[in-house]
Image 1 (cartoon, rainbow, N blue to C red):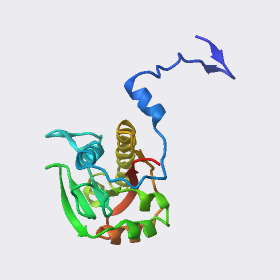
Image 2 (image 1 turned 120 degrees about the horizontal axis):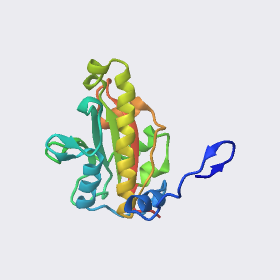
Image 3 (image 1 turned 120 degrees about the vertical axis):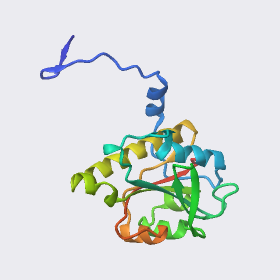
Length: 203
């Protein structure tokens, strides 16, 4: 084993040809999208990899105490998804289904809530990751907020890798007005928007 730098221990070269390594190498942030709708099967896959169930007791991401204090919302613009009306939907992992929360195209309002980031307006869909503190702080106190943020990160990486695998683009957005996002999604005041992912075909 060779020493490199000031006392650093050199490591063997990583294998960059595994399936996961190739996905990680190809992953990038995409901020401009084509005006092309997604099909419902693609959206289904994206939502499942974000927060779906693998078995009746285990999901695709880890969660502190297996409490799963997150909710995933789907904002669909007009003609954004084939066979799906524009609106805001809550992803329900237990049934792997969608429940309409608010009808109408949310893209313009979400664009304003996200400080006019064009990617939010252009993308056919935006996946919004929301934390529900009361589901975890009762067990872990204030540290529950940290666990909630960690869980959002797990969800976000899954969305990135799935989008890459499906030749789609996405970008992680954390700059937005929390209260405005709550109004767009129809959320309670205690709910915390943590991450927004515009997803679509790259330009």
